[in-house]
Image (tube, rainbow, N blue to C red; front, side, top):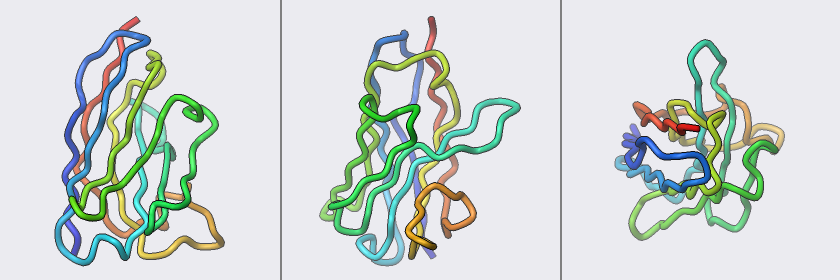
Length: 126
């Protein structure tokens, strides 16, 4: 079993920055691909970013490319999402997730992730 706990959410003005953290416990962190997803009210959960086991490969949704950066620290057993130039449309609950493998090399499908955190709210005011 893997436990994921997100932190770092909050209220920020448009154009501002936040850093989300996801602390991982349980099975060996480095065995998992890690991803961030978000869900706004009334919308489906959507992919934001993902990172490979070693951290050597990263994946981003087009909507956040160039503004968000995913990273991981295998020594601290933590994955981060650095969010810059935030927009009101980034407002959502952000979830951290862990996948033991990626199916067909895809990182953007929620159903491929085995474990999920409880989420942290990010609100961007205009």
